[in-house]
Amino acid sequence: MTHRAIISLVVDLWPMAEIEFNQRLESVRETFEAIVEVLNPRQLESDKDELEIQVTDPGLWDDQARAQKLTSKLSRAKQSLETISRIESRISDAEVLYQMSQDEQDSSAEAEAVKELQSLEKDIAELEVQTLLNGEYDERGAVMTIRSGAGGDDATDFAEMLLRMYSRFAEKRGWKPKVLDTSYAEGAGIKSATLEVGEPFAFGQLSVEAGTHRLVRMSPFNAAGKRQTSFAAVEVVPLIESTDEIEIDENDLKIDVYRSSGPGGQSVNTTDSAVRITHQPTGTVVSCQNEKSQLQNKAAAMRVLQSRLLEIKRREELATKKELAGDVKASWGEQMRSYVLAPYQMVKDLRTDYEVNNPDEIFDGDLDGFVQAGIRWRKRS
Image (cartoon, rainbow, N blue to C red; front, side):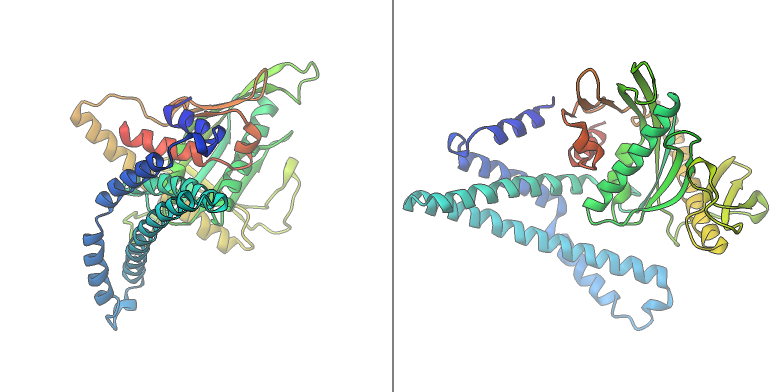
């Protein structure tokens, strides 16, 4: 268990009366001041003023891609400034409320101050992570692909568990995940699935989930009830934007159409609306079958193809930089997490050492701790 996780556990278990309120509030204040220094409100204010001038240009929407980029930047600058102001006020109010509760021996006011402090600690931790999402593509949406690995029915069932886990994680954050394609296994679960999350900073957060996931449990598919280890792979690429320069020659594409299918190969569509696109120079294959028409499926598949080609380009550039720099470290995203359901219960990230002992909550989408630990780990690596 990490130092941060141990502290969190102690805070949850000890009565607040045994913990120095002012010390924890000072820790919150110091962390917030460090975050503010990174966010640079003076620069944010200057950027906001400049962007507000630019978005008043009558011809702005003649270039929709540029207009969307500018309005998005303006919205983020305003939101950051509002967040800074709001948290400053909350820290001050919590301090005043707690002091008042002590002066007046008001237990209900003290409980309210303690509750606000705990809320502040959570919000500051999330804000701290957000300031680390400054990679080239971190602010993008994400395309996530989950594939079953070794382990037979247990692996395909595990892949479906991961698909639900990430869908629930997205939904709990108010995002709207969209399953673009699902390849069902003949037995249980899925062979693969592609999930699109088109929300800002989805890639920055979900990218730390890329790699090999391992499940250990008493197999429900084994008559002898033996313990089974199975694997699934998770790939995460940034969602393509209209301004990205990814040119695709139509002659390089092989496009197949077929009927959509459900679990066990059962046809769920009487027309050839599903689309599979193969980019022959790279061997990249994408499919989409969940839209209503062949045209919509083709458009969605092309969007995913462009996202994957963008990721290939990014990785090639990164590999070149590492080669020039003499960096021969392995990719950080491989063999990254174990989910153990038997003989004990634990989910542990092998990169960060962050772990919890309630797999059910994790599979229901409570991934915030793992994502935050992964982002901090990536920044240190």
